[in-house]
Length: 329
Ligand code: NAD
Ligand code: LMR
Image (spheres, rainbow, N blue to C red):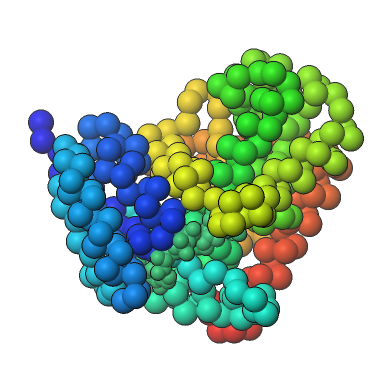
């Protein structure tokens, strides 16, 4: 049976993450090894030539699943009929830029892109925002797309989730594949809270296995939360291949489901669960099935976790208030 290709739009396609992402999308790592894709690459005019170069390389790879590439600087064209949108392109923070300036500059990107998604995307559109500040950029795009169900707009905390699994595996000597049910709560920022109290290592409670609260508070949490900055310091540029890998993981899991007994972390519009104010885009533990995610309910949140979740959520509320004041939502 020949399947209809899935339209995948990638913004910031000529950037670092774009370069690490596009070849793997074309080889089936986004949706599945039997799912053909058509790529739409959105760039700003200055990025179009480089995007064309990447498209030439994609052609030269003769990917059997790749059924077309279109390059444009027009969001209405880029999102026309899009089934999956990966919003990677964003305005990076530059020297002397205040938080408000960054939010405002990104509002100028994510508001029109949200509107273009609203007006042009396919009914089953799924959106992942990678560009920082990812949670609030997702909120801006979602607010500009009133005809799209809000839950289709998500922000990436899967990289944080993967980082936390890797750090926990290193500490305990476990295989990463033995670790389940880890959670990232809150913002994709230094306030995020990687939670191991419900995580399992080969079926045993992770916090009990580690049994070292000082390591948890002083090593594990800051290492995960500040890993992005550590990569920038080491590489001289922000994470790209691991970020692309996490974007693939996020969408693959959303579309194809979580494994029985496991969950993942996604930044999603809060429904008020766990005391997170409704509407802000915050990371939660979620299970996925048939392209739909659900927040894992009923977890006991101890005082250690509560304080950290609340701190990250407070930051998200402040970001929301700032973009509201700027008229972006
Ligand atoms: P990059 O600077 O290499 O590439 C960004 C690309 O976006 C550039 O080619 C630029 O021309 C393009 N762009 C800018 N504005 C655009 C617009 N309006 N429409 C389309 N394209 C546009 O950056 P990168 O390393 O690829 O990172 C991209 C973003 O991802 C950054 O904001 C970075 O902070 C973020 N990031 C997020 C995570 C996460 O875990 N959520 C992890 C790593 C990086
Ligand atoms: C990361 O977590 O690697 C990035 O979000 C860091 C950044 O600021 O680009």
